[in-house]
Length: 90
Image (cartoon, rainbow, N blue to C red):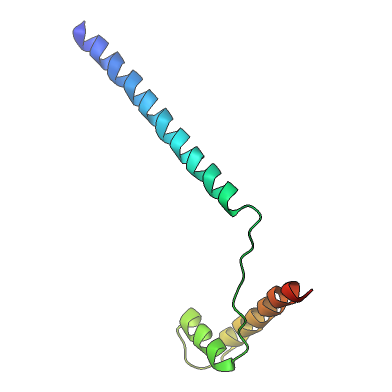
């Protein structure tokens, strides 16, 4: 009978401990959201082609800027820069 009570006590304490961890996670998330609310991420302006090619090399792992995958990424990268820089200037 004592083993049964110990088992119940073990289950009850495990439920309470899990509940506290969940609340701590929720509090951390709420704190992060409130901390970042109203802030804006600013990306650096990149106009130098050498820097763009370096980014392409890091993303794709290939040196040649003429292959199709690098061209597509560079077009997307230029478009992203145009959007973020354009929003700052308006």
